[in-house]
Image (cartoon, rainbow, N blue to C red; front, side, top):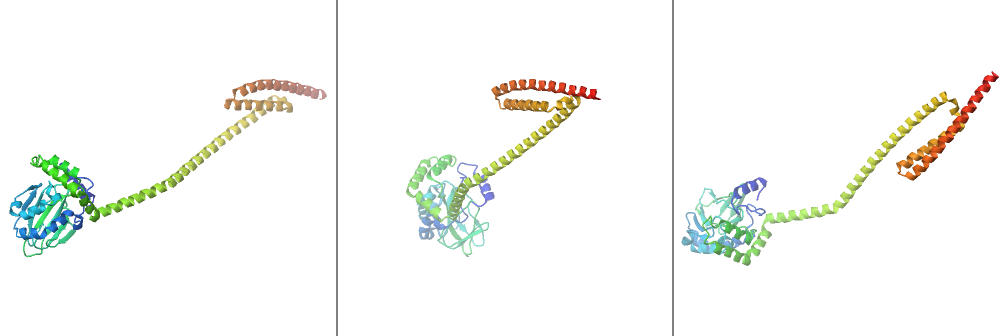
Length: 369
């Protein structure tokens, strides 16, 4: 029903009452007459109606909310023809009527009470032009036009004489019987149709069993908006299928990218940890070297090769014990503790022996001097 703005404005205007606005109904300004069985049925009675009502001089209602109005007494043939069209006869919105389009004057068509209706127009004695915004269509005498009269439509004629026009308001073909009867029951009391409610709903259900499938099928075959909708749905289906086919590939690529990003992050973290560990080892090595130099300056015998070898063994055992503790290998750590204690005693003996040898050498040197 037009673009988003017109549709929202229409929904706002019509949604105040039950059945006034129904979501999802497809409509265009001037659908093809071939799309409507109402237009087909009306045209089949064109000669009879024109012969009787072609002399009408002013507006007169034929049916009003599915009930006979004053026009049925004046134009019984026209009344009978319209009542024979189920979608018009059971429609409880607005009126089906005869209006007169005068030369050089714009005649506004009634505006819809619900988007659940379509309009069908048939001029009787001359051609008319229908206009709605930028949309126009020409309708010859005794021909029909289907109209979206929710949008506001005006009729004009180039004829020098006034042209009587039959204007039928009928159910939209996509409104199913259940929706129609629900709307009728919701509105019957407020419109004074409580007594006719049962008869109208029965007529709706009877007509639906007889002709609704055909009416809806014809509408969907010939309505351009339905074709656009089918193409849109087909395209959406194709796009969805393509997306579904591409999704695993895209997901796999995305997963690989995530895994690569994770791998790079772990690699950078590993390098940072190794660099930190190396800096700590370098710091400890420098401290060790400084400590050894201080010890050797204070206790020169510690430079003895045997002492240095035994101390290196002791340090190796201590490192092995630290590794075992870190790996939670407590039995191995306990065993290494005994080895460390044993090696510490070996180091002490080596130091004593080296110290004794150093002092002895010092005394010998003094004696020679």
